[in-house]
Length: 161
Image (cartoon, rainbow, N blue to C red; front, side):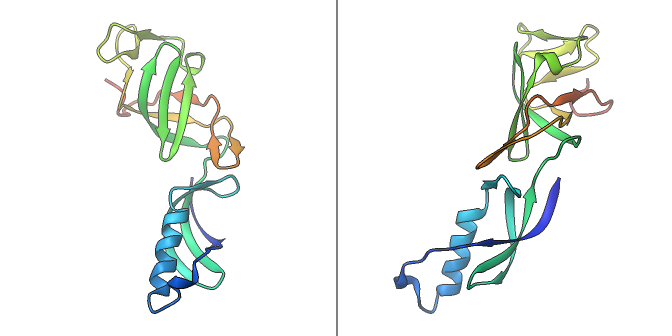
């Protein structure tokens, strides 16, 4: 889920930057230090939208934090016999073959390798979009991990053929 929230960040600057371009320097340093990072508490910082205060830097940002039970769209980045590797925005996610419906089999001879049903009604390969249900998340200091999400076969999604 994406949120628009208020955050604070402390920026350390060498005194040589104290001058007419201080505001621009603080903005650039804020963008560089926070965009693309992850905090366990708030999630992945996607983009800083406004800067409300420069002293103790207060700003608003769009963050991505998945939660248990959320249904999300993911892009398949790798397919192999142990499962699927996907990306959900900035988050990487592995789906074990045990979480893929039993009617889908891995086909190593296909080019590219894929999981597919016997009648090839559903085929999942690299770069396909699939829908997942987050069954839990683990928060590390600088990352959010979704262990073993559940693959949801959804009619009409990009991975269907």
